[in-house]
Length: 102
Image (cartoon, rainbow, N blue to C red):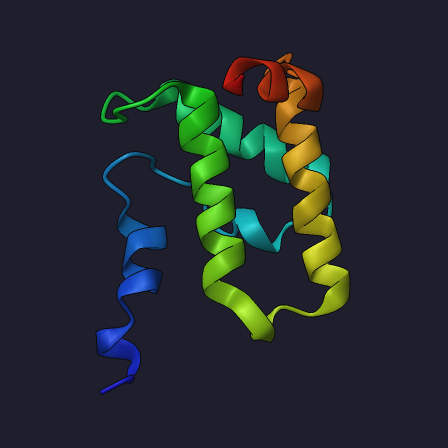
């Protein structure tokens, strides 16, 4: 039941209704390149239901969470740095997000 045809998470990443992702975006070596690509996809999207920042961050978190233990520590580090880079390319800081929640 967990064969390639049943990998719903792979299908979501590939065919997301919110974003059309660049091929191999999560395989890029640079956190900054991942962030720029996600921003480009989110800003161009006409199907997203939230802000471009939230859509991009959501897709990045989704990918990290779905990979789980299969993600090497080095790869996880790059993807976690991509979150910080994503905040930067959208002109946000971690502190801004904390203040808005209060």
